[in-house]
Image (cartoon, rainbow, N blue to C red; front, top):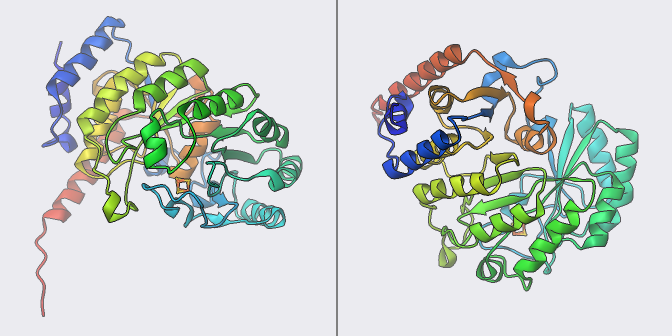
Length: 378
Ligand code: SF4
């Protein structure tokens, strides 16, 4: 049997991308031990417009807008974010404004929204005043999907979210007390995160927690404990993202997480959650690191990758994985990850050979462009 490292080496866009031979071999052995059943993988990407069905057409930010009930404000000011994640979101600071925003976005073609907001000092987003408006939205537009970034909740809050008609609940699970205290500046415990997840899972909501890999200033620290929490609570799916510390202050800087360490976490996650969809979300560092992380995700048997690096379709196909695509931009992918996890039928099957050829040509054209010397004239 050909080594997976050699197979990866034959994928043109992975030329020059260093992969850990031991890790690739371990993933291959693990796959052989499960009788070579590498399974299906779904790529979420807007670059497959040719395959878009009428149902999936209309990909774009307007289809899945992100809305913040606090605008750009957040009291917590975590070291890796400093509320910057909220800045591009559509503000809806009052229930009436939320109603107006949703009506306007539906007119523009929105199929759903990600509803979020900045946290208070207890790590909670204060949605209380918005539940009647959310209920009204769901009654008026039942097909309009709402994925809620819940933050920390207690049992009553989780029930209020369910009662309001939210479709999906997302929260970051943190497994290290040091990360909670130092990065999030929170006086809450790891148990509070587990109790929040437990309260959400006890409702009928589709619960999709996230684990942010490298959240402790670029180091992996509480990720395995977070994984254990997720394994115990058994949500609908788990999304893994890798920290992108663009906004960290200089005196609290983040390192780019080591891609091989990130890769080593994937088989552990797969092993802990063999029957729960495991997805790589779109947030992760760019460039060679992204190619390395994505290659490991394909080899480790993750079920889906948002915005895959060049060459991933070819790699998956060469490893024998059935490839499907959901032609969606990042915000839709998030929605799909959360709301379209109906397993077997999600995504569209594609002519892999044709796609690989097209991807290869695009990659070659981009590389040729990058190699054209730029002559500055003054
Ligand atoms: S609580 Fe959320 S929005 Fe606020 S700084 Fe932290 S990660 Fe950013």
